[in-house]
Image 1 (cartoon, rainbow, N blue to C red):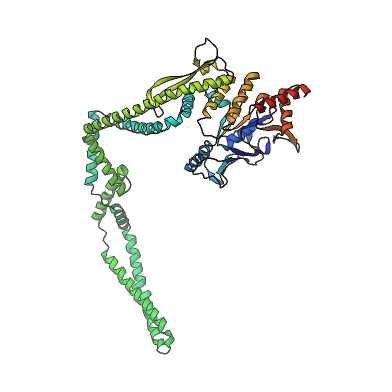
Image 2: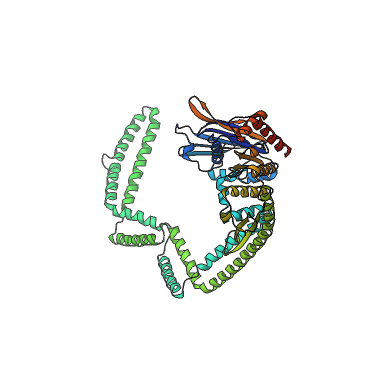
Length: 557
């Protein structure tokens, strides 16, 4: 469950710290007090895009922290599968810092991507606002709801179907590759044969291109090389060259060493240097004698290089790339030569994978239809609880013309809210207020089958009042027995049902309007209920009504 919500520097909130409790947590406040900012803050921490208007212009980053308490081995395993290990006290801290153009996400002080943040928090919390109510108008959402309800029965089949569908798509793609006609096949085979001959007859050798380019550079610059060698030889072996000078130095040191034994080491160094220079001179002479710069060799070398460079353009820059290109062309040619046999095998593979995928899709469809009956009964009971007194709810199945990764089913929720009226799609019969109650009914049913510990409801009371509001509060209380529920409301019937009640209000501090969140004590809850009940003044009658409303709510706990 969500233990703590901490918000800093977001819109009108300087800093808010809210410790949340089990059961039903209610947030109330005047219109414009900042209730929506708290929902925006939670959405921000869950990885949603944040409206620029929520970030302050003073350069201070906005920050939101959600502290979750994790219970249950299954939830821990699911988190660990995503690379998240709860702390020793069973907590997981989700943090997001945002400034203009920058976002930093952390889980337990480890920096993570927004994608991972969303994956992790999807296991811990679910937000239901007006946008999701409206999603009930789209049929894709209906299948998602049914699958969530039937997930325990569907899970194994859906995994098998997912694998079978991928194999089916791959087989379909493979078969499509055999769509070329005979003339096109002959042309392709002829061209591949030509390229194979060209590569094989090229006599490619590993390292040849590099050796040829080195020899070409040597031959093109032969004059400069000979000039440099000649001067080097003159400096090493010529008169007054290094060799001659070192020879003189050795003679002088040898004579001096007769009179000073301390010069023996220097004499040895000089003799060694003389020998090295002498060796260098001989090596230079040998190198010059071996140099050959034949115009015919240069012409042949340039011709070979031009040919190899042409192959590079067509088949790859390196020897490895060109040999790989040769092997690929041989494989393609073999495939064309065995075209009929391979096409027949591809057709057989396609047919097997298609039958398997459709068999699993129909098996999944049967499970969905069986579970849909249970869902219809459960949702219809929940709708009656929410004051849809003459309601009929149904699920209509249509088989898709082409199977998708989710199977062959397209479903649509149908509703009739008045006696004698036929069942129609939700988009044709449900108002905004009814959509919110229908979604609440569905969430109440799903709460028994899902394992998301915290549910947030925003604008769940849109377009309702009176007895219907009381029914909604009772349904929220029912969900709160097995889940932590956080609900923003303006209706006293719902607020009275709170296990923990928080007031959101605007105050002025330092000449600036800010939003604050306060957990209410028992007497303060009554005052807030009086405010929600309305009236120019809080009279004894209003206060008595508020206390009676709270007592009634307690009796239903």
